[in-house]
Image (cartoon, rainbow, N blue to C red; front, side):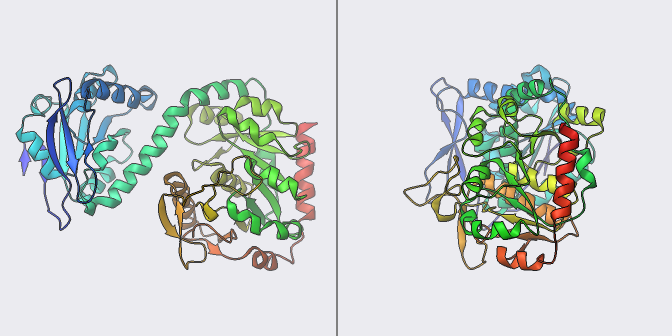
Length: 459
C-alpha cells in the first residue's frame, strides 16, 4: 500500500525479522529494543541520550558531503527517527531530497503506529521505502543511473533486517566498512597528500612500456612460509612484486623483490622499513602514504595516484598519470599496479585473505599477530576447496574485490598461496606448478629494462 506518497510493501517470510519494542531512554526520548531468537536483545539507539547520539552520527556522516555534490541522500534504517530528524536539521542536507529505507516492515509499522515518525512524515523532503523485498531496493539503485547519491547506513538497523534480505545486508555492511575507513582516515590522507606533493616524485608512465612477462605478487599472509623455498627459482622466470609487510620476511631468506608497494596513511607504517635493506628496491607508494615513510625510504621512489580520492585524481590528470584502483588494501593495489604495467600472467603468493594457522601474517612480518584461542570471524571455502578458513570483514571485502576483477577480465589469474581462502575466478595452483608453467620464460631482459627505467628516472 502507499501511505502519503511513501512506498510500503510487505511480502512476509518464513523467517520473520526481529521484533521491535519501544522503550524510554534515560532522558525521556524513545529508543527501541530488538529481539531475535537465541540472541541477546539489541538497541537501535542509546539507552541514555538517543538525540545527541543521532546528531553526532549525522555530523560524521555528512562531514565531506559537500565535496560529493549529491543530488539526493538515501539512508538505510528508520529506527525511532532520531537520526532522520538530525539529518533534516543539518545545513548540508537542507535542499536535498531524502529517502529512508527500512526492511523490517512489521517493526516500522509498530513504531509508526506509536507516532514516532509523525513530524518526519510531514516533511515533504522525505520519502519512506518500507519493503522486505530485495528487488525493491536493487531496482531503486538501478534507477539512480548517473545521479550522485550520498548513502548513509544506520548500522544498528541492519540487525533488525529479516534474514531473507541477508544479501542486501551484506552489501550495506561492506559499504559501511569502506565509508567508515575513508572518513576516519580523511585527515591523515589530506595531510600526507599535501606533504608528499612538496616533492615532484616521478610517476609510473615510463613503466607502462614493460614487456608482458610473468609476475609473482607477494603478500605477507601466513601461507607465505610454504613459498619461500621456491621463490629463488621463481625469480628466474617471473618479476617479483611485494607488499611492504612482506619485505622483511623475504630479506631474511635472501630474496629481493623487484619492487615494493606501500599505501597506508598511518604512522605505524614506519615499522615496515625495519629488518631489510631498501636501497636498491623501487618503492611505488600511494600519494597518501604516511609521508615520513616516503622521506625515510632509501631506495628509488615512485608515486601512485589513486582512483576515488579527488586530490589524487586531479593531480594525475595534471601530470598525465594513470589512476590506480586500490581495492582498499595494499595487496589489491599491488595487483592493479601489475595490471597497469601489462605484466602477465599474474600469480598471487601469500594472499591468504584469512587467518590461516590462527595468525594474521607470515612469521617474520612486524604485523604478525598470533591468537592463543581459535580466531573468530566468518568462514569461507579454503584454498584447496576441502574445508573452510576463518576470515574477517575487511579481508572478505578484498576477496570479493579480487573476484570482481577476475569476472570482468578475460585474463587468467593464478593463486598459488597454498593456504587461506579460495578466490572465485582464479586458477588455484601450487607455486611449483606455476613455476613449471613459465619455466621456459627468461625474464632477465625484462628485469634489466625495468632497472634501466629506474636508473633513468632517478639519476
